[in-house]
Every structure is written in structure tokens, then in C-alpha cells.
Length: 160
Image: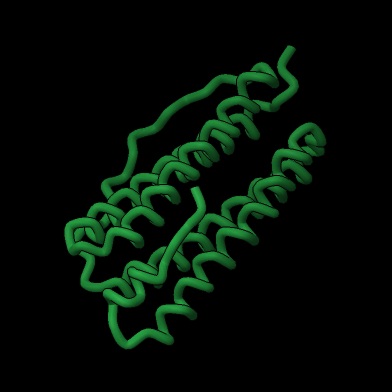
């Protein structure tokens, strides 16, 4: 017997797509930055993409562990014609806000369905989104203080 309802299972499968789409978006940003020789920022977004794939795996593992069924959907083609570092930073921040909304929606659905099992999983994602939005906002704030894109890139580092 499954510990996950069909409705919540379907919602998590949609969230897996969101996480994989996020990774794809961040790869697009990373590649654009690398092509423009902004290697530190390129690496920052590459690691961000890897993190999104790890997020998808958390949802996949939860579905399997609770007896559900994983369904993968077609990924969306990400934007790849970026105009500037600023556009990428703004898009990254906006995207993290969007994902936070999706996670909050999952919390509300679990409450509505009176499904208690995913509480710790969802709390982890709530905490993670606080960090994700903070990091994206901080990058934007730091960028505003630099007069040169190259200097900004030079001073942008992310622990692996």
C-alpha cells in the first residue's frame, strides 16, 4: 500500500519537472557566461544547475520510498539569448521566487490532503528556498556595487 496519495504523487512529479527545468535554465546561464569569459559566474551557475538535479532526486527518492510512481515530463527549452550579466542575475532571482511559490503550493496541498508524511521533506525545501533566494538576491546586490562585469566575475566565488 502506498503512503503517498495519487494527487500528491502527481504534484511531486510536476515538481520534479520544475527542478529539472531549473537545472536546464541554470546550465543555459552558465554556458552563456562561459562563452563570454565570465568563468567564475559560469561555474557558479553550473553548480546551481547540479544542485537543482539533486533537488529533483530528493523528490524522486521520496516518491519511490512511499510507494508512488515517478513520471518524467518533457523539459522546457531554456532561454539562451541572454543580454547581460544583470539580466541573468535578475532572471535567477525571479526564478527562485517562482520555485518558492511552487514549494509553498506543495505544502498547502499536503495540508489539504492531510498527508503528514512529506512534512520533513517539504520543510527541507522551504529552508532551501530561503537560502536560494538569499543567494540570488545577494548576487544582485553585489553586482550593483561593481563598475565592471569582469571585476564582478573575478570576485564571485562559490564553494562547491
